[in-house]
Length: 177
Image 1 (spheres, one colour):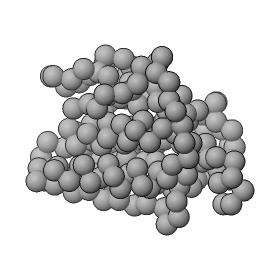
Image 2 (cartoon, helix red, strand yellow):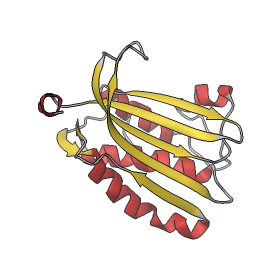
Image 3 (cartoon, rainbow, N blue to C red):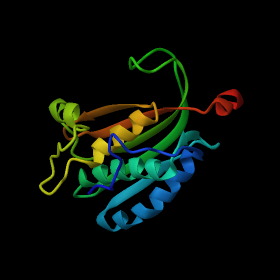
């Protein structure tokens, strides 16, 4: 399942939004999966995690990651969505500068992926699903790129998947933290 998302030519109208609130609203929409044996855990930073983004775009990011996680757990499992303020001390990714970031992490204990699949999972039209479009995770990557963020993935077959997104904090947030 995928939520509609941006194309590489979409224009986002950013505002300062609380990532925690976006996650809470998305979690409410995911409640239907509890009937399918999916247990949703939220581990949200105690203070607001502000980012500059279009709220609908962030909602689609969280929703697409969560839906893919649910699809990886056909027999049920645990879906964890975390937010935090994290500090990148060195450059784990070339485009990332050291400093504070908003971190969004979506983790499942589902089927996991091979390195080959992990490497292609954000490619346009790539899907492992019988009826998938290959656009959901691609739209996540496009949105995060537009927000000047980064994505990293840890996954292994039968061990689940963890997708971590790091987004720059607005300048005022950096001063307050």
